[in-house]
Image: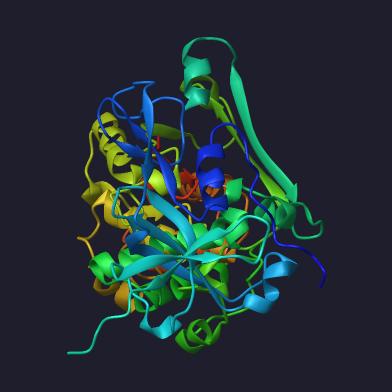
Length: 138
Length: 296
């Protein structure tokens, strides 16, 4: 115990994203020429090679592309979270983001179910995590 | 493939390809696996098991695979290991119940879906046919080679449930070899995880999407089966020596140096094997090499 969870390492490439997180906003690079919203961050557009870039604020809505359930602590600080879920989330705007699915019954998870971003304020920088969108019973 | 390049260019006469690691008795493999790899660690994501488990889960969704398919791979390969005194799992049989009783590591993978962590090493020599003919062992030639590397970034990847690089790599290798799947006597497939074997065989064309469970059932890949796969036990049950485990086993089988596990009429084959199909891959299914070997 006592080990802290790893914090984001902020560099020139991912600063836009993590600075956005500080204000609880999901911000990605969008190519100003072709409109491609890219993740991971890069200095040029992987589709059209343009350097022109603008900000894209994402809605936080997306779908689970795939997910796994950790039953083993690879890092001491995550032991108390076991079992926890790591997922690739396809955001509405396009990027596929690796994060956690929280606030859920693990048995109810499936690929392609809709999820929404909620902010985990445990560490110094708020982390974008996701939870299943609650469906209204009809 | 690089070895062939330098030999063809006449830059050297023989290439030694080696791997050695005290992975089990030191903490170096564990350190590598849990070392911080980008900001994924912020979300508690570490190592290769979870990366391949993400791929496997997507494959479960897309074409209905899962533990009921992978059990055939884990138990089939273990039967081969039980014939191989060099295998870490030589004296440990695995029944279906043992597979299903193995604890989750990163679900949908159980511990037995993972390859071993091993002390040891392995090496192969690649040289010219002219030189090889003068050596004491039977000659094994390279009939075909192919590589395909579909993605640098897993988060930008669309290959996790196939087709992986295996598909294009195999096309290239089979075209070079001038043969088809029906000519293959056995396979030595890079098997970091059970699912890796399934997706590789599927992308090579042995069965259609999601048909692996039926194709693998009834001991297809095990001793006596119609398509032996990973006849040393593989990375799952013999030893983890990266891509050297499959290629060295293929060469040894073609040289008929495999003892009790030797593919032959005694292990259910019509004849001794002539052609063996091998694979290697890296990253989270991001790179792939396919090679076809033949007894000369």
